[in-house]
Image (cartoon, rainbow, N blue to C red):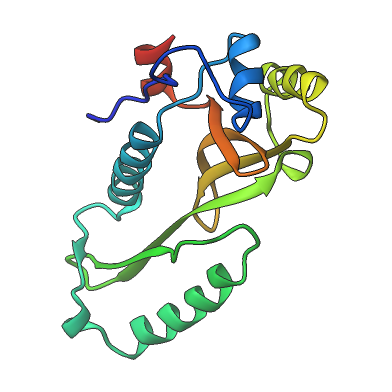
Length: 181
């Protein structure tokens, strides 16, 4: 993986009153990831996880090669994934065939869930959210993670207040932990 998550607010420490959440995060010495590094990281992880889930020796089925099964699965997946709460992006769906002519698909999507509804959130993440909430009780917290039908990958904690929102934590990402801790 090439993308590295970068923590930085940038610029000087003087913040106008319109950036209340940013000011609270700086007072708590919490530095958010830059939007560009998060976007790049998310795109790379989508590609990497798609390839990791691909069947052994699987070759991608191009759109012009899709048959009835692929079209049926595509419609079902778009309905199932499109109805998820917190989804703003369409899922990445790819179809594969093996040398034995077996057909498979991979379907991944970045999904947001309110922190209180999220599962498997470590205590240090909940503690960070609690620390922020103590200073700014109106802040909201969301977990965003890459999901397939069976598994979740690369969770982030997002904090929002008014028009501001920041990615402030990530966990279960070994490459990230090696580079950023």
